[in-house]
Length: 91
Image (cartoon, rainbow, N blue to C red; front, side, top):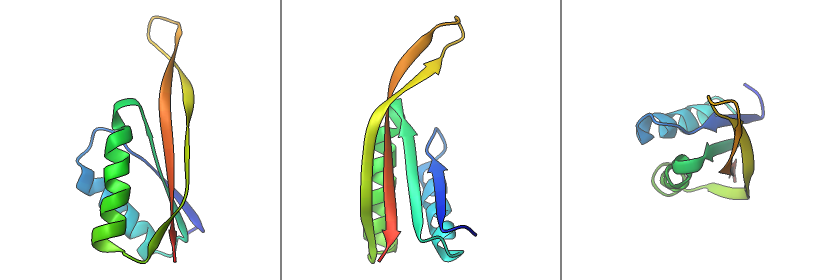
């Protein structure tokens, strides 16, 4: 597995993303990026904190990036959506 893994948070239950993070670290990833847009931002923060506090207390939050992404909507236009990227690093 590579040094870095990205996990995009969506509508699935939180435990699936938590298990994906734990699996990535177990397989040798040094950094896991938890990414989300729009309404999933709060879920991404919860997932990062659960992984860090309950399962792997040796993890550190390396960096947090916030921004705005432009996405294309069905009507043919674009829409701006907030995004977050939380980088968890094994200590």
